[in-house]
Image (cartoon, rainbow, N blue to C red; front, side, top):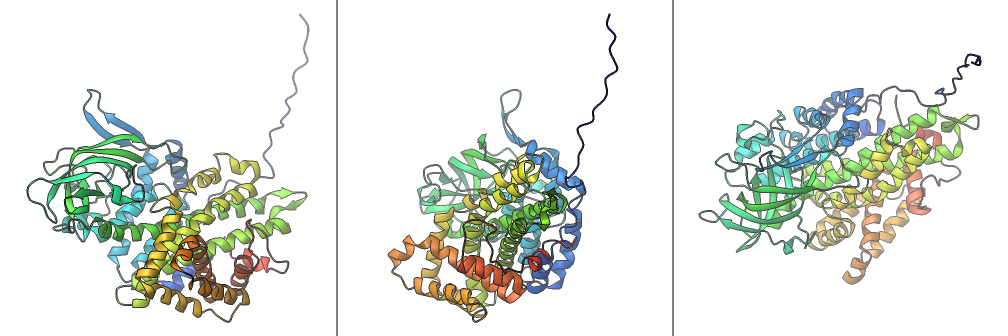
Length: 553
């Protein structure tokens, strides 16, 4: 038998020139633009309440929860072992941990706890932070938050309102009135109509007598039902008086499972931690909310809230992606220099940072308008308009932003171990939810037609920043000229209009509330020499001053 020399171990797998494994850092303390925006727009209690949340979200276990909730998506159990209808969705424990974190701190209810006292700003800032843990679970948090204005139209609905305000998250399948805290979902869309809810065919028949607060039975199919394990759902159905709004609980008044059959869970591109379902109402019990035939106005009170949340989520996702990029480029060396020291990369990161700050300011301004709308006509006019503008534009920027951020990390950005792949898949969904781009643009035109005070309020906001940057002044003049077009031309150019209204308002906010380095560069790169790609910046752009604001870690 031949003799063999012992094998020499060759250790070729050395991890070097890669970012370290440290945690994400305090999301509040490291985010200077957020702290400044909250201090500028909101009362002091908001920042005091947000600070512990930013610290809590820095824990490594929270990042693991977000990862696990996506890797192990919800599973439908339509029947029990004996063939009885079960219609339950099982979530990974990580999902429930994230829900408990948000509800225990009251972020689903803070807007109503401190209504008109900064509550909406607290909710929006918290959602911006919570999205950085995991966007998917924020859907039921948003739906629950947004249900309150509709529940106020439910005759005898005080108990529902009280349970919405609870802080004891309980995911078990129990009648809602046996819990101290309820979560709420939404089921409006039907396959034959989509955004045109007037074509909904689900029918509602009164159990006894018709009227507000009375019980009805629903029959029909819903193409999308958000958060199907919620304790109750706001939904639309046809009555003899027209399309009406209903509250359908998961259990009947006799504590039996309501006849809301889950046909399947959607196999979505992203948003995997959150379940979206097709459901069938088979004589399901539901209470009429508001007056019969007034379903669209009733549900729009909820949609106005969810649209601002759908504008905030991409801002939070941008911030998450920016954090990942900044960490990577500071610790990665290419061609014998740190990526963070190379002019091309500096311009890309600075451009991403500007977009993030502009998006954050616009959502915070919208929240401030909601907080003050009750007794200020100017703020009420802005509260009608900003959610639609911000939802449209932030979500148009989101997918390109995530693709650029992914590219900054190179190949590792494209694998599932980093959050960028998850954020990239998630980016389109908020553009589709609560009205896709064209629907939002048409709603902007309706606002301008039916509420001319909103365009007057926009002009007033823009006017506060005139005379500071020639590109901004030119953009406002172009917008004013375009607004004089005929209704037919305005409809054809509604996308241009929504984009430019959003961007000029972002610019005005940056001019008034951000450092000159950020505001001037935004105006130069968005309003004067706009490029379809990130990183195209003026030669003399103050890159170093912009990058100083990316992180205070």
